[in-house]
Every structure is written in structure tokens, then in C-alpha cells.
Image 1: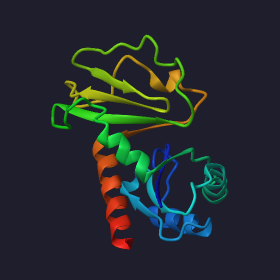
Image 2 (image 1 turned 30 degrees about the horizontal axis):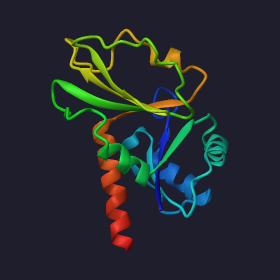
Image 3 (image 1 turned 60 degrees about the vertical axis):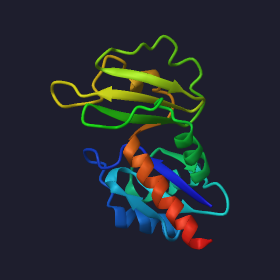
Image 4 (image 1 turned 120 degrees about the vertical axis):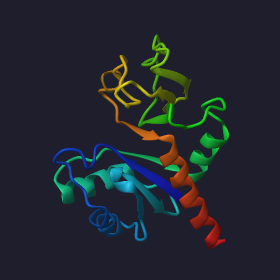
Length: 182
């Protein structure tokens, strides 16, 4: 079975992680054949059981010298998420980008009261451990600068944000690998 590990906060500032080195560390942790997609912490893992997040984090910290919070989703979970159309038919384009934020535990009531900012962002759906939003192109060209500080709302939990196109590419890559094995 395939899983995707979403690593938080790598290749920002001094937190440099080379992808070939990361793949070697993961192989040493029992995930030979791990594959990365772009250098922002998206790793495809093959395993008979769900990867042990704590063991992954511990092994990466021992090697790289800093904590790398990790969130795991199975290929099936990601495929179901995509099929559920969390953006209500909206598509990624030059004027709007689609994002998912994965949360390591239950979101609970942390997003209660968060309101869309017209022309800035729309929160399209909140699930138990992930939420989806559309960021609209701002005058400065950015899509994710808005008044809600999600980092502050989730300061006690691991979260990591991904562009929807990255999710689609990872799922496509995993599905192709899975199909080639059957």
C-alpha cells in the first residue's frame, strides 16, 4: 500500500534537507524506494502497514539535527478526498489557488468563527483533520496572505499546508506506481 508523508517546514531558512539524503534516511528507517516530489516535503512511501510517524520523526531528527513534523495520509484517503470535490467544482487557475491544510489531530472548534474574506480567501470545507481553502491572487501576487493566522489557531498541533496541484501530482504518482505493481 502507498502512503504520502507530508513533512512540515523543510527547506526554509536553515532547515535544509536534500531530497537524496532524505530518501537515504527513509531507506535506513525501512522505507526503501521512498520517492519525493518537489523539495518541499512530499514523500511517497510503500509499506504493508501505516508508517509510524513517531519513528519517522525521531529518525529524521537524529539525522538532520532538527524536528521535522510529519503527517501521513494513505493513497486511498487522498483519492477519496479528491473524489469528494472539497472545492465545490472550483479549479486552480491564475486568479485562484486551491489549498489543503492537513492537521495531525482533530480540528475540533479551532475554526469556529473563521469567516471568508471576499477577494482574499474562501474556506470551502472543514473535515475532522484537514481543511480546504481557495486563496485569491492579491495585488502583490500572493495567494495565502490573509487576516486569519492559522499557525496561531493550531500552535499546539502539527499542521502543514499544500497546494492542491501538489496533492494531485502525488496521488497520480502513487496511483501509477500501484497500478504498475498489479
